[in-house]
Length: 116
Image (cartoon, rainbow, N blue to C red):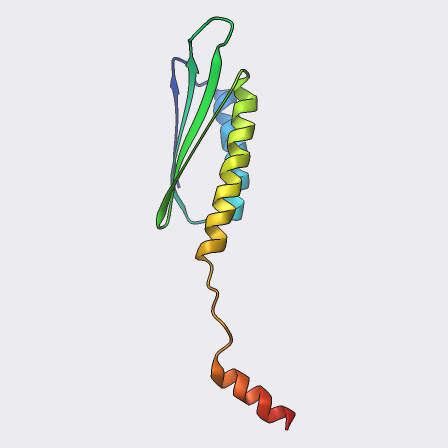
């Protein structure tokens, strides 16, 4: 898994990097076919009162790209909410890609013969 964490108008400190990596472990625990993860942490300076901390992630899994973003006044809270959203989307993607094959006809016929 290739992981890129970058900051926009923000320095990514080692503590921030470690926090993001710890939160990403939960996602990769649910779905191990993650190819690339690109995390961008940014500060939007619209007004000094409303400094919006924004976190976004672009996750490339086998067969699909998942993009999630979240903004909050606290960057750590934004990361938490972002990972919750990402986790839900990854779980949904995993459920869609799992095999939903039914029991084959041969196995069904053998079961019926054993009952007679």
